[in-house]
Image (cartoon, rainbow, N blue to C red; front, side, top):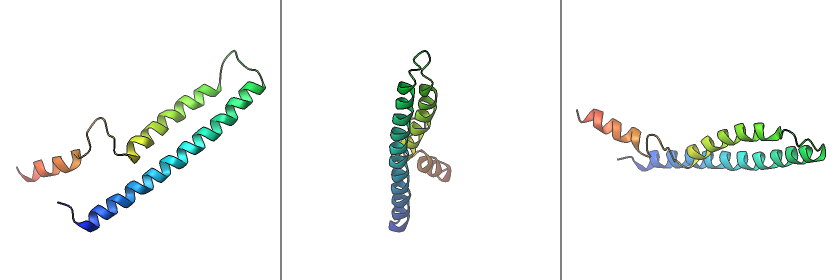
Length: 90
């Protein structure tokens, strides 16, 4: 079991990640609104170029979300701790 200092450190790191995610989200929204307005102003409808950047950036934003809110769909929430206990109990 983790002591209070370890839990406090983990909580601090998670709060930093959450703050980074929200800053990233606001930047994502504002920049893409500017790009969408530029795309609309130049009336370049044949190929919505703005969607290329939005798609790629959105993938990065999704990974930031997973990290900030401890939502790892591949290994689970406490996977590392379970593996450590499993190895120590051998």
